[in-house]
Length: 66
Image 1 (tube, one colour):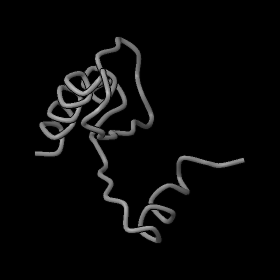
Image 2 (cartoon, rainbow, N blue to C red):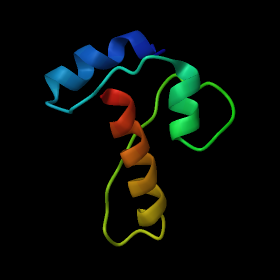
Image 3 (spheres, rainbow, N blue to C red):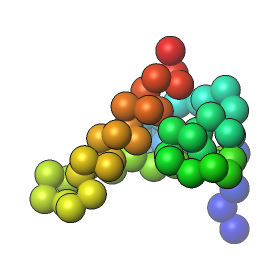
Image 4 (cartoon, rainbow, N blue to C red):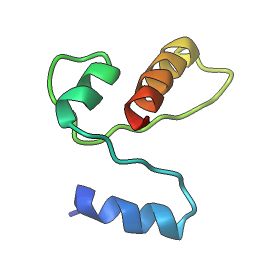
């Protein structure tokens, strides 16, 4: 079983950028849901239909960082 607390070690090992946010509720709002969220992944692929939604969520998460 994989735990969220293991993520930073895995990400660092694989050179995957990651950030911590202040609250699960804020991350949930940034992801466009009303429930708290413990983890989110932002992927990019220009060919995807969800590209605009991905960019919107990415910008919302970026705002939480600063």
